[in-house]
Every structure is written in C-alpha cells, then in structure tokens.
Length: 245
Image (cartoon, rainbow, N blue to C red; front, side, top):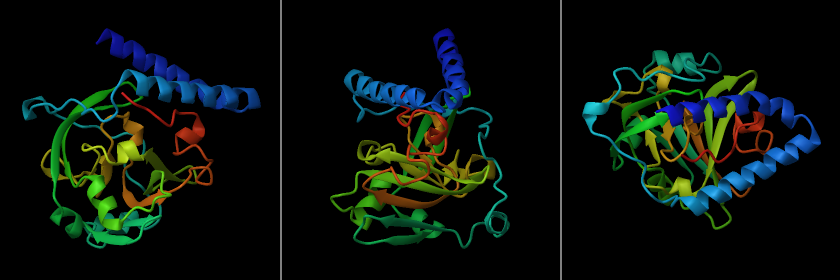
C-alpha cells in the first residue's frame, strides 16, 4: 500500500508538470522519448496479453466514484439521458469493411463478459467493480478490420474545455479478452457518473484510458491527425499514451 501511494503521488506530480515541460521543443522531445522508453520497458517486463487480476464479488467497493466528466452538458447528452438512452447508437467505423450502428439492445444481445476488476486512477484512488459487456474484439471482428488499421480510437459524448474527449489503444489491447464495452456496473445499468450508457474497460491500463460516454469506435492507421496527435484527450496535455499497470 505504501508503494502504491508513493507511485500515485509521483505520477500526480509528473502530470502536474507535464504541460509546462511540453511547451518547449526540447521538453516535447523529452516526453516523447520517455513515452517510448516506458512502452518498451513495459513490453519487456510484462506479458501484455496476460490477464489483469480479477476479484470475488465480496471485494466489490461499496461506492465507485466518478472521475473526469461525471455529467456531460454538451450536445444532446442530457436529452438522451432523460429518455433512458433509448435512441443511443454506437458506431463502429473507419478502416472496416462493414461499418456498424448498434443500439443498446443490440449490444446487450451480443455474447457478454462479466469481470470484477480494480480501477486504478492516476489521481491516486482505486476501486473494485463488476463490469459487464461484450468484448471489443467481437465488434471488431463483425466489422471486419482492414489490414492497414493499426489503432482503435474511442469517440465520446463529453466535451472538456471545448475539446471532444477521445482515447485510443493499439491492437494488442483492442483484442485483449478483458477489453470490453461495459453497459453495467455491479449488475445495474451504468450510472451517469461512471459513463452511462457505455464505457470502455481497458483493464491493463490506468483509468483515464477507460473512455466513458462512448459514441463511436474508429479503426485508424495513424493517430497523428486526431486531436493534437498524441492519442487521447489527456495525452494531448502531457499524460502518457501507454498507461500500463
């Protein structure tokens, strides 16, 4: 516990300083080099296809807090929420042969995976919850990924400071068996604070990779022309793109 607290504090201090460092060309180069080192070191030290720990239901946290956006006010999200997300659609698009547009009912009818895992937030807190939803790989296989697709981008309904939230992963995480599109938390529909009606669970990475309020899944060849080119809303502001744990 002491080690985890120290690492969380160290991560928070790093994040706080990232934006200022990245403002200079030398700083941006340093951050890019550090990111490449972190990703390479993680691949050497761990098997990225290994499963994240799963827990008995008896260890589920009594309250699973929200982080980041907890109640989007932009677009038609409030109207969708008031209607119980009856008209919500999830698109699967980009470099695919068969683009998809799925309702929540479509998603609930797919083969489901339920997993009890720990969410580790870069802010320094953790919680254990039971998540249910189809594996991302099921949707990608149905859509038919093209050979040139290298990354999966998650588009979201929330907008922070005038920028639409997004995240991304490579194909290793996209096809990991614990990467699911969750519609339920602890046996109930996702609360709004936790990303209703759909959110990603990328169980081998820190919490900011688990995109909430999911509207689209997009297969792309490169991340360079999306946002500021770093692969995610927070990554564009100094966080690491690969946040493996």
